[in-house]
Image 1: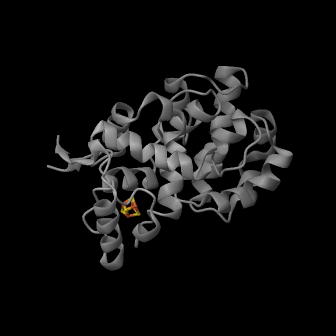
Image 2 (image 1 turned 135 degrees about the horizontal axis):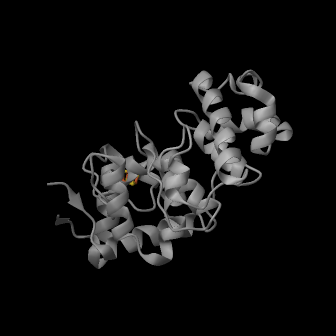
Length: 238
Ligand code: SF4
């Protein structure tokens, strides 16, 4: 059975990530809830930087569903051709704009089911929009959050939904709002996919990842030896 952190260890982990990034926020550029939905939907299998490069000029001319619809699929496609899966994404952006106008008066709905019913919008995008645009405490699980949660032992699960459920349980209320950003940024810049930077990782003495390598593992071990790990750092089975 996969090892998971105790609540005390999870709290300490969040405290350290929060200390490293006191004001976590999305790296996607957006102007309003509508452009946020579009930006997050475009970010699937693309980098935030790449999405921002494309949406900068696009949002200048189309920052509402009405203007996006007027631009047309071809017009949207021309702006996002540098992003992966652009054909399908252009189609979805037009379809979701249409749906927002027809069913929601041109506004982004503050409702999970309605968000997930929009073309190209899944649970992850809905979670990001609910958190960013409406201040709800949700944790969107993307590839970075999924990896960091499983490696550290914050949550163990084979699917994003399973990881999300566990994260919602183990994340202390005070950290719920920033959790998605802290985990995503930690995964993007420190706990990277191929060779995690364990040596400089602020939570290396808490993390349960077995494959910390060479000097990285040595550093983690000596850090744990010098400093007593938080009481909850002891692994337990779930
Ligand atoms: S110690 Fe390594 S594996 Fe664990 S969270 Fe830090 S970077 Fe990731």
